[in-house]
Length: 222
Image 1 (tube, rainbow, N blue to C red):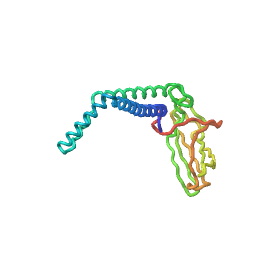
Image 2: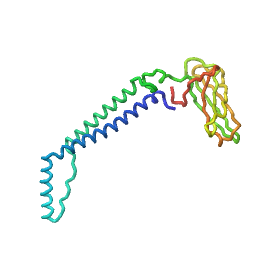
Image 3: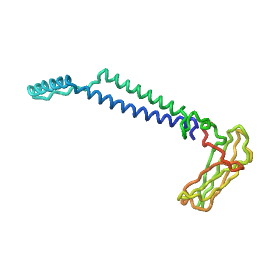
Image 4: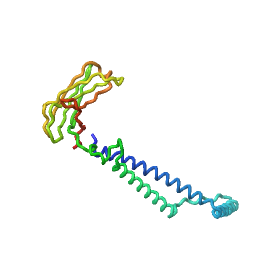
C-alpha cells in the first residue's frame, strides 16, 4: 500500500544512508591512523619517555600508583570529527541526488516518467474464505483513472505447494463498464484442493483482449 513516489525515494535514501555510514567510519579510521603515525615522531618519543620516567619515580616514592588522568577531548579533535561528519553528509547528499536523477538502466527514478504514473485501477478490498476443499475470494476495485474501463476481469492464478500453477480462474468484474471514480466487485471459488495443499494466489486484472491492466492496492494511494 505504498505510494509510487515513496517507492522511488526509498532506494536513493537507503543508498545515501549507507554512503554516510561507510564514509564516516572510513574517514575516522584514516584520521586515527594519521594521528597515531604523527604521534611516534622523535620529539613525541622523548616526551613520553620523560613522562614515564618521572611517573615511575613518583610511584616508587609514594608507594601508590599514580591515578590515570581522565580522558578529555581536545578542541581540534572535535573540529576533526565535525569536518569528517560534514564531508560524509555531503557525499550522502551527492549520492542521493545522483541515484535519484541520473538515468540508470533497470532503476526506476525521477527520470522515468512511467515510474510515477498513476495506475488505472485500485484494489480497495480483498477477502477470502477457506473451506475443506478450497477457498473463495471476494474483491472490490476502484477506477481512479480518467476514462471508463469496459470488460475488465480479475485473473486469479492459484499456486500449489511446489510452486506449480494449478489453475487460472477468470472472474468478471461487475458492472461491465467502470466509469471514472466508480467501483466494481468480483468473486471466484476454487474447490479442487484443500488449503493445506495450496501455496497461495495472485490477483491481476485484464481487459477483453487479455492485456493486463496495472493496479495498486490499498486506500492511501492517489
